[in-house]
Length: 516
Ligand SMILES: *C1O[C@H](CO)[C@@H](O)[C@H](O)[C@H]1NC(C)=O
Ligand SMILES: *[C@@H]1O[C@H](CO)[C@@H](O)[C@H](O)[C@H]1NC(C)=O
Ligand SMILES: *[C@@H]1O[C@H](CO)[C@@H](O)[C@H](O)[C@H]1NC(C)=O
Ligand SMILES: *[C@@H]1O[C@H](CO)[C@@H](O)[C@H](O)[C@H]1NC(C)=O
Ligand SMILES: *[C@@H]1O[C@H](CO)[C@@H](O)[C@H](O)[C@H]1NC(C)=O
Ligand SMILES: *[C@@H]1O[C@H](CO)[C@@H](O)[C@H](O)[C@H]1NC(C)=O
Ligand SMILES: *[C@@H]1O[C@H](CO)[C@@H](O)[C@H](O)[C@H]1NC(C)=O
Ligand SMILES: *[C@@H]1O[C@H](CO)[C@@H](O)[C@H](O)[C@H]1NC(C)=O
Ligand SMILES: *[C@@H]1O[C@H](CO)[C@@H](O)[C@H](O)[C@H]1NC(C)=O
Ligand SMILES: *[C@@H]1O[C@H](CO)[C@@H](O)[C@H](O)[C@H]1NC(C)=O
Ligand SMILES: *[C@@H]1O[C@H](CO)[C@@H](O)[C@H](O)[C@H]1NC(C)=O
Image 1 (tube, rainbow, N blue to C red):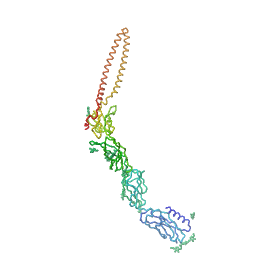
Image 2 (tube, helix red, strand yellow; image 1 turned 90 degrees about the vertical axis):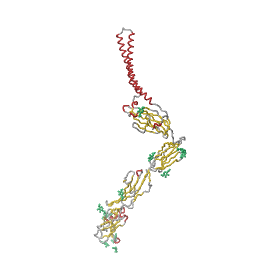
Image 3 (spheres, rainbow, N blue to C red; image 1 turned 90 degrees about the horizontal axis):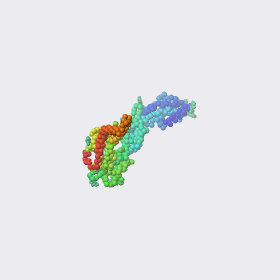
Image 4 (tube, rainbow, N blue to C red; image 1 turned 180 degrees about the horizontal axis):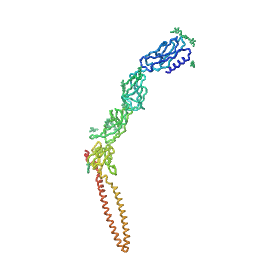
């Protein structure tokens, strides 16, 4: 293009200031785009030329390549037909010069450049990819759309038939697609579509074949846990290794403190191993490894510690208080003092409570405790509660807890302390008032008596005083009986219930068979 422009400028300069030249500047006309192998006419027009010279017109392309030639006849339109090839693409110029250059001093003249776009229909698109078919997350995926032929092409990329659009992770440049920080969502079938158009009317497209790319997820650090199995006299640990994430298959390997115990390749994210267990030996440690590529994921070391359940088993509780300070529920906690693999059972009277019922819900939090959430609104929730703890692998050694009688009415009786304080305060108040009355009356009566019976003897005075004291005391006694009827008896009832309910039960004396 620069070359062409330079030629153009030079031609013009020479022409305008060369006084001998009578050759005008030719003008080139033609389409701005053409299809490959199409035959296209270009016109080079020359307005001014020396009469006695034969003028030759040439259409020059890129790199001074001669594309067409025409020997000018006066009063003719110089139509130069051309069969379009891919090297027609670029700036075209028409050069006019005398045919017999050596005989004349006339210098050549050059037309303005004319740009021609050559449309080569796209053909046989294919995806070029040299990387591995299996990538991992956070990698870069770079695909290229190769064509056997095609110019002025635009590219589109499909993943599983859906058009990809630019994003911070998806970059499109010419025939390339780059995906940064790949995720498993970038897995699938990729297609590229190359297309170009001619004359805004004809569209050529070429679809590549699909290419499957898999973005794998590295196995995450596995969780390791175990349950204990008892088969007649032998114990074994059923060890489970579980990765939360990771593309399948994953190879799980179990190591003890010295060596590889077992290994399995699984089409799932977990694996289970059975390891013999000797409860008399000090516990060994186990580790899981999950491998679906480098780097390998490791679990924590898990000690194979098995402690049988041991009493005492305690049952504590919290109250749930609703409106008006009414007890609406209880949270009961069942805990054993020892035991690494406990199993909890809850009982109402002698009936086993399962995970969930109309008025309760069991929330096991092994190995620490089990929580029974109880709503006391329903009358069916009334009864005596207790829990039992046994080893999950052995029902033989179940240990029972203390028992608690639960009843909505009982729970909502005033607590003893409150009753004592309220009643105590009330009694003191009555006493104070009474004492005040007594002294008030005594004082007024005394002064009256003294005024009226100033002459009477001391004996009489003291008699009426004692009689008055007697009357007051009788009144107080009646009063206290009335009060005690209202307050004392319910209080005593409540005390009796709570004490009767808390009967402790000793270990395994009870039949465990009431579970069923
Ligand atoms: C060309 O000739 C014209 C007069 O015809 C003159 O004004 C101009 O400066 C010349 N240009 C050059 C480049 O010599
Ligand atoms: C054409 O005519 C010019 C004068 O008009 C003359 O100088 C030149 O030599 C002639 N050329 C030929 C090839 O006859
Ligand atoms: C070119 O010019 C020379 C000398 O002027 C002449 O002898 C020759 O015949 C010419 N050739 C043509 C093809 O006109
Ligand atoms: C061409 O031009 C030169 C001077 O620039 C002159 O000497 C010569 O005679 C000219 N030739 C013709 C054929 O006009
Ligand atoms: C280009 O398109 C126009 C209509 O848009 C049509 O008339 C013309 O013939 C087309 N040219 C070619 C070369 O196909
Ligand atoms: C190319 O793919 C596009 C989109 O899936 C589809 O519409 C078109 O028909 C396909 N063309 C060919 C030639 O397969
Ligand atoms: C218990 O283990 C011993 C040796 O470890 C074995 O011989 C026996 O068959 C096992 N018993 C059962 C029931 O698995
Ligand atoms: C580790 O496992 C191997 C094979 O299962 C066993 O022979 C070895 O005693 C175990 N090591 C320990 C420390 O338990
Ligand atoms: C292990 O994986 C399978 C399939 O994903 C699942 O059904 C099973 O519940 C898992 N096992 C455990 C112990 O999580
Ligand atoms: C992890 O798995 C890959 C194949 O998935 C295997 O090539 C590699 O050796 C494994 N590494 C170990 C330490 O087992
Ligand atoms: C449990 O026993 C008590 C009597 O001790 C009884 O009132 C209650 O209805 C019983 N509850 C159930 C659910 O059987």
